[in-house]
Length: 424
Image 1 (cartoon, rainbow, N blue to C red):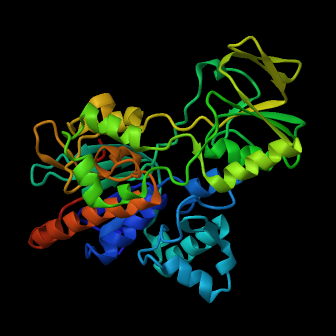
Image 2: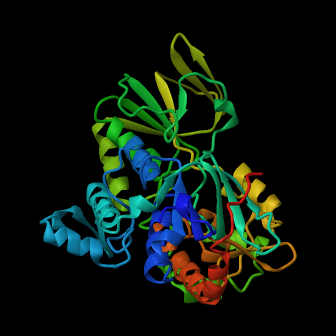
């Protein structure tokens, strides 16, 4: 049964077809016991994980920072088994003192294997979600997703939007030709003589070391390039650690926000990439410079960066690897929170129920909207946006919908004759 032929609301709609949304979809089918015709995943791209693939290609990623047990499948050792069965264990890459990591090609091939094997593409509705609002009906407190393909009625929804496609752009870069963001307008196949990569984290260094094989590259960072194996202490993967170190503070509080920030190894580079960067510098293929940019302008087809210390850098192009804009401030998040009367915390944090990841309403009640990914950092912790965070979030969301689904079976029979929700 397709959504178009379904007269009543869906049980759950996932907004976002990235790693979090794709993984959660499987957990809802396997653990929450939802029927395939009762769920869908809405994403504007042609296929699931498209945004992740594009970002990986843009920065010329070749391997993942996370371990081989973190992937889109529900079996922890599924990727390892996949590699062994196909003679690809050489793509499980060693890291001293840390479990092996998959190559990007192995990770994506296994993701395709999972998606195809579970026919998840059939549950993907290609559309953009413009907002979410309450139903107009007095009979239930469900939701309506207003999409580019028409409204979708559902009892529950999950935001799995990552950072929402918004990237951090310094003020000096606005309106300057030749300055692009690595995940936006940047064309990795374009050939130039000299590039400046702005940023000092994993994306900047990954891109710079690859570009340095064919052109002159300078990495410009405000801070020294620092090494860290993971993006946070691995103990943050476990709910016990999260509960004892994060949930002791009030939900949405400044204390939670600062605890998460302090625990993240932001703008750090894993040892394997740091070694590659240093080797490129030693060979003279790449330069690393520290400094703040005061202004930028285009002169005769080149970009001139004027530094705060009085220095100047000139390049054919400048690529920003400056990270994401805060998802808490995303206009879509603002609209949804306003429409559903959802509670916001310090700096716009989503105030969630720790036990369920449901977004709380201003009146203190539980809404029917759940959150996974970076938007859930105040509850899931510093690894919320990572693959490990997808697993932890799905644990609680699937368990909650399984429980609520049991109580809704009797109600659903009476709603089969309900007409479609009118568009707002």
